[in-house]
Amino acid sequence: MKQLVSSLSGNPLIKKIKVKDYLLSGETFDLYYDRACDMLVTKPVPANLPDYYKSATYQPHRLQRKSFFDRIYRWVRNRSFRYKYRLITNNHPKVRSVLDYGTATGDFLAFLQTKGIDVCGVEPDNDARRIANSLLSANVFERIEDCNRKFDVITLWHVFEHVDKPDELLEKLIKKLHPGGLIVIAVPNYKSYDAVYYKQYWAAYDVPRHLWHFSPLSIHKIFEKHRLQLLAQKPLIFDSFYVSLLSEQYMTGKKKWISAFITGLKSNFKARKTGNYSSLIYIAKQTDKN
Image 1 (cartoon, rainbow, N blue to C red):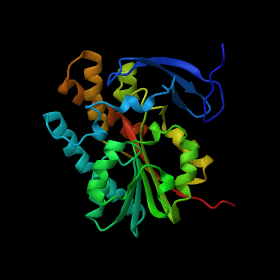
Image 2: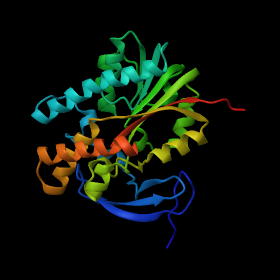
Image 3: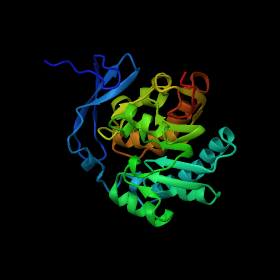
Image 4: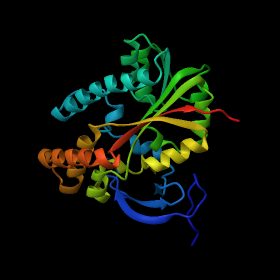
């Protein structure tokens, strides 16, 4: 049998667990452990991967505000916009321009525009890009190559885990930075308490859309490889509750609000000591190449 290797490290992978695609297909996928990168890798990757995003319930590409759950999601998301804005400006007080890679429907960039920031986005999904361009005056492109300028800050909010070739993308993004510019990456953390608690039901595995499953050490190794200096590592506190609610539904077939709240709270409490929050934001700048 042909040995599986990680496309990031080139090292052999160790099979860990099977995870089901609860969002759309019901198919199962294997997660393999890459010891060199301290990360999990989804296998196999479907040849028709874009089709696995075509769900009416896939939140990042939705515009409707119908259910109570949707309204909570939007409320939390809008609060997170203010939090993200503070993180960016605290680490780059003179930020004037931001590129958001994987901008979905463009809501975060629309928020930044209200702060007087010049924005641009990249979104491969046609429907989401159309919605984003209606908000942002055609400043959202299909590919990073279509955006011919540089930025003070480049953000990837829960996008890096979706990218087919993360090393290649990161190099492209670094070339789009002004001197002293920042790269901001937010990803789920498979070493969080809620991930360990829910195991194969943990919603943030989200196979096969999530190709890579990072730990803090994973990101630190990747940043070092690309000459990026980590400036700050911050939690996304609400993610543990949202992910726990979905995980409860996957595990029990019901939205168990109280159980999810308790698990999310416990995850955040334990992370105060370990640093292993459900999702983490990593803020970095490019170091000298010499």
